[in-house]
Image (cartoon, rainbow, N blue to C red; front, top):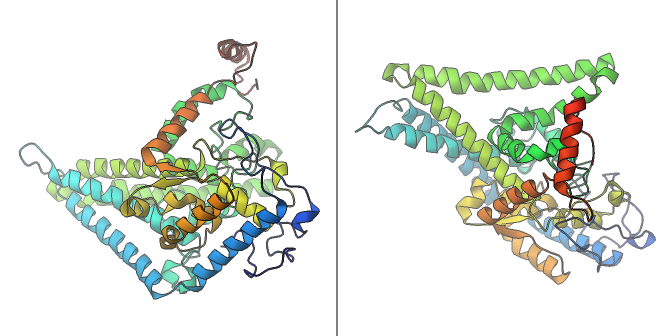
Length: 434
């Protein structure tokens, strides 16, 4: 899907009415520039030096890059995704076959367990990242292949594809890093910006963060289902809304049941003749944990490291196409690494390029990345990038820092924490703001 409305690369300065009515139809010169919110990671507005005309010119240059790539899609791209899918399927089948002998020891060592678990972990990562995520973005719909189409694909994840596409494609990519609109910003359990009010709940967010990484697919399912919102508003909801939510909840339950049955009943049962049922269960458990932690790490590195901007709700009112593009560039970050690493991240290591063009085939992001960086350099915009180790460490440190109250002259953070703890002891309320 195209999240910013299409227009010819030679469009006039004043855009015509957009397909996506969220974007403004007024001239860039008719309205004041709206800046990203200043945050702890961005002490100054990184786009303050740009004029409205320059922002719209950036949009036109990006339109031209997009049109060039999308018009050149063809057999080579189709062959790429088919090869990835074929590789993933053979890797999964081969790994599960090896795990039939995962309980067999060779000199006290279970080589089949280690080999099968590693292969199954890689297969699950490939299916979720480079295949499922990107297919459901509509990156391969142009092939008109019903087996590789966003409307037909169901991935190996607890969240049903229909629910994920709504929360991710329609909400997250539309409202990237907008506080109060982009629910991916902390997933409702993390404080990711100093201007978010601190509560005692956030004191434990390093623990929530690790737990969320380990159980990421289930956290995403609950998030896509808007479980927190339902629990908070259910007493005020109509009977029809409650029924609709319960229908979606049952879809999640059914999906989880199918996954659990496959990974922890069917395949272990197939391993019974070789005495490998228990080891097959542990292999599947480890593979799912590895996939969850890897996916979580890649995603947080693309959205939360220092240097990435967040935005106030009011900053996107009447947003033009150029401003939407600008927000994607400032609200995303990349990862450096090998070609194999890029594939295993679903090419979300090119998060900036992905947020600019979410429906572009993922194998083309590396091709356009130097052009995007050159564009941002020419307009003196920060192109946030770094190694996986560096970016993930910076995120974990940020999570720890923001678990504490803000530093304010004249008060000690320890006193704020103690005050909040005493209030919780009296009332049982973790949500009081400080």
